[in-house]
Amino acid sequence: MSESKLSPSRRSVIQAGVVAASALTGVSIPTVHAGENNTIDVALIGCGGRGTGAAINALSTKNGPIRLTAMADAFKDRLTGSYDNLKKRITEEERLQVKDENKFVGYDAFKNAMDVLKPGDVVIFATPPAFRWPFFKYAIEKKLNIFMEKPVAVDAPSARKMLELADLSEKAGQKVGVGLMCRHCESRKELFKRIKDGEIGDLTMLRAYRMAGPTGLAFAKKKPEGMNELEYQIRNFHAFLWASGGAFSDFLIHNIDECCWMKDAWPVKADGKGGRHYRGDYVDQNFDTYAVEYTFDDGAKLYLDGRTVVGARQQFSSFAHGTKGSAIISFSGHAPSRSKIFKNQNMITENITWKCPQREPDPYQLEWDNLTQAIRDNKPHNEVRRGAMASLVTSMGRLAAHTNQEVKLEDYMKHDQDLAPNVDTMNEKSAAPVVADANGLYPVPQPGKLKNREF
Image (cartoon, rainbow, N blue to C red):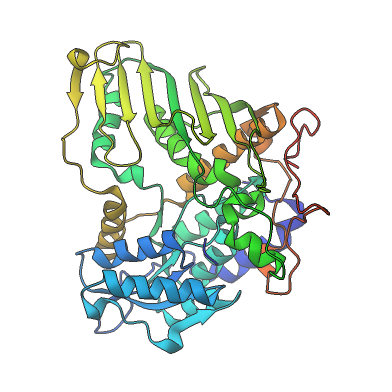
């Protein structure tokens, strides 16, 4: 596969996981596996572009010996393509040690790959986000350290599961990285410190934009004749809300998270809107435009704009505004940040009071360097709780936009629309969570008509 309270319908599943993992409570995960060998072995689960990139970052860290020893994906072509790509990119042969018998294909392949590892090794989750919680549950049982891509949940029920599992992983001493790499950006860290020190006064407003053309796999055309429905949806996971939270959750989460970081708080409610425009022969569940107004407990606002319209003006940035000045959080993408502080609200060169270094370290690599260093030093490093909250707040805004209703965090925490109720038991014969109509079209949000459900 290429990428808190409990909901009553799923309570039994998580309770089983709690029992299975309870033996880990108070047990420290080894910094590396036991024995003479100090090498960290890594398994890659989810061999699309995102997973391949994560593996390259993992194998590029300088924090001691590390090697890739297992790979898994639901589809053989994805695994083969990823391995071939890694062979071209990883020049140190000893770091790429995946034997043919450790290349696993199928819906249970994730277990096979983790079974190759020893306690203290690292598993990468880069599958569609819907699969995070069952994979995470198994990794806890196997006493592994983990790197998981964002988002880590696609709806409120799966976020609640991740928060429960986060508690278990923290008690077990697992080191867990979550792919919100902007949190590891040194320039943003300095900006956060300066904001906390009051350089721009009280933070009253934030603005975030990710406005581009078609992104990732979000624009999907009708399923090819003869292809299995579930396979089609997993291969096009950005197109389906159950698999990824759609384009909103999978892409806008970065802007939302970095703004909430600067505010040092999570919003307490969201009010949103959006729409579908030039659909042509696309059949995905996404809107083309999104606008969400998040409100924090002190009344401060975060205004978020997302758009995937061909030919429209593009912008990819986040800003902070305070009572004494303003700041650029990110200017044109994830990296480099080009963070700056201004003495007032007019963001022009002559008003700059601080700016980050011109050359910024790659945050994608830094998140791996920080994770592996924490493993080597056996220091606390667990980002799951923060990742789950970022995912929850993001999907809260998505629900607000898809329903055109105000959604409060305290209510959304209890929301019961489980978009993928059988994700933990899926196999090649399983029915897909959503079904196309006779015209090959999938259910889409109906703002105003559906007021508490996305479809």
